[in-house]
Image (cartoon, rainbow, N blue to C red):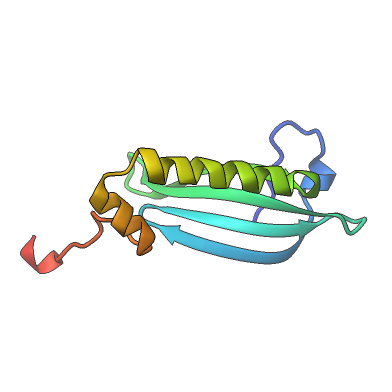
Amino acid sequence: MYSEDIDGVGSVERSGEDVYSKPVRAGKRTYFFDVKATKGNDYYLTITESKRKVEKDGHFAYDKHKIFLYKEDFEKFAEGLQEAIDYIRTNCLRDEDQAAAENGRDSFSDVNFEEL
């Protein structure tokens, strides 16, 4: 895993020791949920979105976006995330999207490559 120092502030805290990592592949993106510990054994979570792209020269590169979630914010973050997901499921998804979300798959991901 890597450590990202965006603004130089808090870089020691942000470069914590890896405790646990869970990658989640979702279509063209991979999400990394990394639990880290500071030198004082304070724990925090980094959530990284990584998306592979092709450069002009044909080489692959990765766009990465990272947020840091500290323990004092876990509960409020989880509540807000769950409310937003519930809202989308209730108000924004079509019936087939809703069924796919409940089954843990995207409705557009069923591709038979032999037909292409």
